[in-house]
Image 1 (cartoon, rainbow, N blue to C red):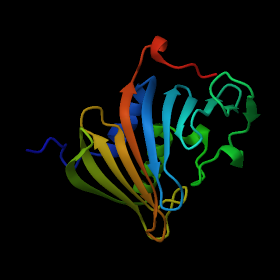
Image 2: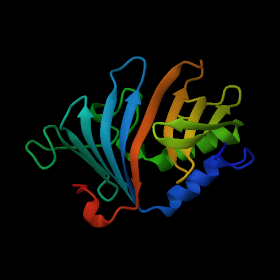
Image 3: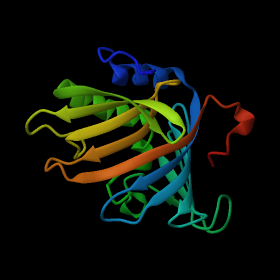
Length: 201
């Protein structure tokens, strides 16, 4: 039995529309790459661009928040609202990931914009329905045309949840087809009441 949408549907565009319609989301992110230790964070996003990242590993207990109003990042090395607190620019190398990700460009919407740009200069392949954890997902591969990369990525594999349409797993490759990063998005919750959102600092 297949519960995946037909392959002629543009799942990237569908996911962008779903992201554009939401107000906030929370998710547990697990990032794996060949050259660095795994990263796991509790991630929260609220429009128009507030971000909070609570680190599980490495740097357990550290919290980062970003405000689009101030354009600044707050870092609490030992937990939210504890001393010391550092104010940083989002382009500070101190708080960028090994892959160069910035907190102000870390949300699902930014990912989908990058995928869309690669898609418009390349090829999209619908693979089929698969199970990721406990979720049914539609597997899509987006490959850029010759010499075309977006933020260092030439190929994305994405698994879109068949229920809410947003990605639950993303794998990226560079121009040489070497793996860059695989990200799992677990326990994704969308449009939470304000009372259930952690403070954004």
